[in-house]
Figure 1 (cartoon, one colour):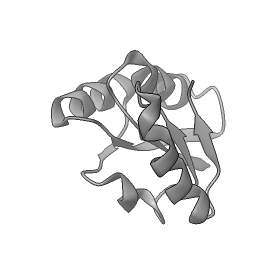
Figure 2 (figure 1 turned 90 degrees about the vertical axis):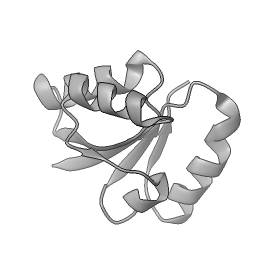
Figure 3 (figure 1 turned 30 degrees about the vertical axis):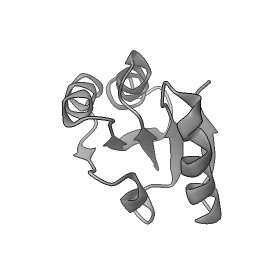
Figure 4 (figure 1 turned 90 degrees about the horizontal axis):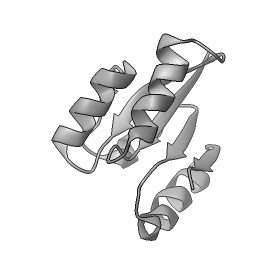
Length: 96
């Protein structure tokens, strides 16, 4: 089972991906970790998407997940996050 970490919770994409992977079990992948722009965004998205782990520091997902989806609404934040995880050897998908 592939473990997916999601970076960004300020829109409906993160919890919809969680729902598709965790509730519908549409793929052999689960959304296991989530970082949100605010604790409130993260908690709401995790609850709706059944995502079990909320992290305070998105960098801490290295070693805990197999792949990353970047879901920031603001594209200005994508580069730093993508670069960090690519350098760590993880596949990265930027949701844009």
